[in-house]
Length: 299
View 1 (tube, helix red, strand yellow):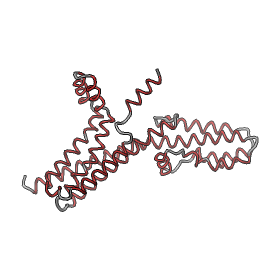
View 2 (view 1 turned 90 degrees about the vertical axis):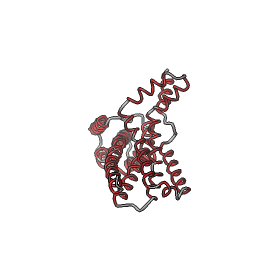
View 3 (view 1 turned 120 degrees about the horizontal axis):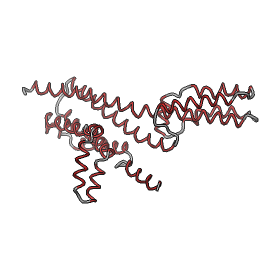
View 4 (view 1 turned 30 degrees about the vertical axis):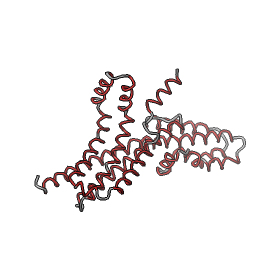
């Protein structure tokens, strides 16, 4: 029964494509290729048409954010699916998954660059238009960064079964590890205590560089291996207290992994805050751009 539940969970949370970051890269390559094949398409359509197409694509892509916060559309979508044959209804349900909406959001967000590129080809850009273009590129770049993060973090969670999902749990586990290590050295030899103070305690009380933790997330490697390498080399001379020192190194390794855990939790939400802030600024800039274009052309 548990295996069937697990298989159902895998199907429920699997994305429509194997790697959303790879799919975004494919979409970006398609945008570049299509633009190269249509060098005169932007001037032929004109700035108004290409601008309206770009705005429309961005508005449709923004539907993903609305879908995550409101179930109004999903409720009516599922009611309509319930009236259809079973096979077709199943496909409609799959289309309404958040994973499917996310894939559509990424696809539209990248392909919105194509009409925007045509829009830029339609004529010389004003300072405001260059500012809007820069904001669009930043929004797309932050979104692509988020897809990369969302591709890597689930693998990190699967590779480390003790991965905590709340920051307070990470802090509590880190504190408990420090207390256990401090109590473990009581009553032992001066050599062990000195090695602990020189090699292990700095790992328990210090912090890993954020860049190193980020690279560990991207590559999937365990940062504890490199962090504890020096302590393991220092333990070669221990005999009687060797097993205890190995245990202390293990505690330090767990603490380093908890640091990565905490970093990933912050990363998983921090990029989205930045992305939404950029979208809000872009929305205001687009409003000024559209109002100015209509005003100066007599609308």
